[in-house]
Amino acid sequence: MNSGEIKYFNTFRFKLMAGVLFINLFIVTLTVIFLYQSKIQFEKRAAQTAQNLSRISADYIDSVIDKIDLALVMAADELGRHKPGKTFTPGNLNIVTGNGIIDPLDIDSIHVTDSHGTILFSAGVSSEKPVNISDDDFFKNLLNSTKSELVISEPELEKLSKSWHLKLARRINRPDGSFAGVIYAVTGIEHFQKAFAAIDLGKYGSLTLRNKNLAIIAQNGKFEESDSSTIGQKTDSSKLKELINAGQVKGTYQAKYPEEGVTRIFSFTKVIDHPFFVTVGISTSSYLVEWRREVVEASIALLFFILITILVSCYFLTNWQQQQGIIAAYRDSEECFRAIFENALVGSLLATPDGKITKVNLMFENLLGYSAEDLNSLNIKDIIFPDDFENDRDMFQSMLEGMRNFYQIEKRLVTNYYTVIWGMLSVSVVRDQLGEPRFIVYMRFLQNVLPSCLNRLC
Image (cartoon, rainbow, N blue to C red; front, side):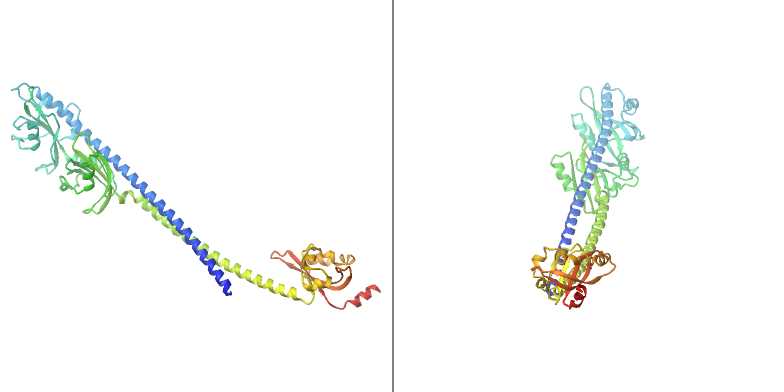
């Protein structure tokens, strides 16, 4: 290739590479946008799931506490109507354990104390020695309070059973409003942990019940294997504190605890009318599993697309080079043919198979006295003497049909001056790639045809 062709080739290659790069960047951009939007949808779905689970769990905690509280209210009211001096009996507790308001599985025991904190009797547990709870914080709160409210203790560890429990207590008032004692139910934290364990939150998921101080009351996981050492602890969650201090009763946030190294989407819901919060956390390793699979599939498809575009561009570049070579060879052949045709010492003429003249050389123009423009508007039969036009029909047809490539014949030609000249014509056919006749070459040789002419005249 010459310098011009090399420059043209380099320009074409640059444009092709730029086009392929642009297409690939466009597809990569669309893929990134699609995956980003998909990730947002997965995060929204995980947040919605966490919200629903926290709300359902909070409703469950609320229903359990409300049922226990309702039973305590009824029992406290019944016990408060006893006349002074009348002895409480265990039968008085049947209103709590036998009325069907609460599920016996939700509580471990129920206790009634006098005004000094001495337990008068209990249901669900037995004790040979008198027990006094006047030093317990919940008893002091009820003793010093005139309000009729439910008091819930902090989580307490039972020394003998090594199990954690909560105490839900209400004040017993005499008819005159004076303090008569308390009634309280003991419920094991393991009851909540059993309920939480039934909820599948995936790997590293968390479901936590916290009190108003955000101390841990219960966590998800199999209660037999749960780490009780976390009960009562306050995990560092500045975002949760910020939302609760702002007065929100529910919300969603994302956080990563340094001690775990796990990022989760959290949703919290306050238990209605009770000082508890339920937080549900779903780890990114769980809710992004499907998204990561989409990333892998999209990446494979993207790499396949890029590979295809590179291969196709290489094919086009190679094919273009081959075509340019063919075009260059054809151009060289055309230029060579044109040089030979136009500078030939014999008259040469090109015509279509139906006789339309398309090109003549200068020798033929001078021979017939026509200009090239005039000849291009004529048919071959216009310059052949009428009596000679049909004398080569069979040879011409056999040449078109491929039975021969050329033939020679003597013909008389009619000039622009209406004179007749003799000549030996060589007629040949040029075919296209399909083998069909493309054009006919007529060449008039300047040779002595006088003897043949005289023979014909004689």
